[in-house]
Length: 150
Image (cartoon, rainbow, N blue to C red; front, side, top):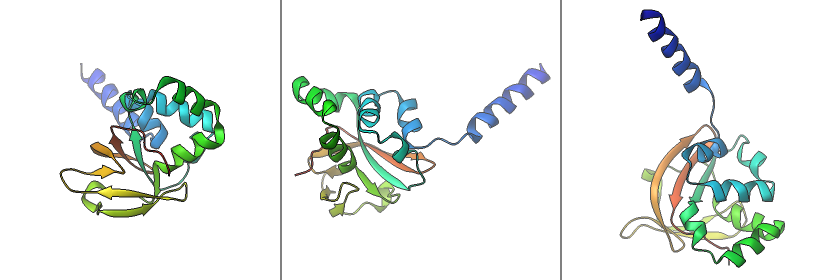
């Protein structure tokens, strides 16, 4: 029995020692399948596996389901537009929930999104539903809608 416990402890420590970037962390969460597919279609997987740090406002599969199916399919086929939409969900740096302030924030896409803090945190009109999902190269905050650059 002692050997089993030691082996299990070694396996767990080896597992926790493996680095998880933003993409791996989102995939492991299980509710970002559409986001993962979109990142792959846009060729952004390597970027978000990069050094960072990044703050990602990640729409769940439910958030992507709110986008009309025809619009989502068209977006997934238009790499330039898809890249613009996805990079609009990313802010340079690692911003934890306790550090969020209301106002405009410049995105990796180049334009600004609006952070609200009244009655919970919002990003443009999307509600933040979970915060501070830590990754080695940044942090993920979960949002309930896909946000679109203007």
